[in-house]
Length: 119
Image 1 (cartoon, rainbow, N blue to C red):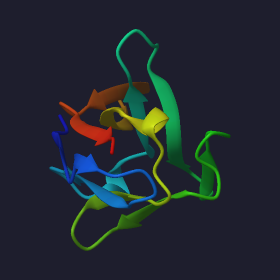
Image 2: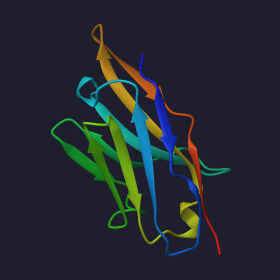
Image 3: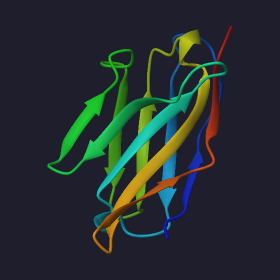
């Protein structure tokens, strides 16, 4: 079992920056991949950025060049640095992780942290 806890959300003006952090209850070395998703009211959950084995980093087209995902293996956290924020970035941001367990893949989600971009 892995517990994920997000932090760092809040209210920011357009053009501003925020850094989200996802703290995992076990070493990141045991996890296969980690990612940030977001869900805005009335919209489907969408993948924002991911760290996959390789390592492979990928971003949604809408955040490419503005957001950066990174991992801190010492503190077992994954961060999402968000710059040049736009009102359309407003959403609940959720941390995701998966791990291999008994030949299957287990998925874990955090509770989410609200990001509101508004003047």
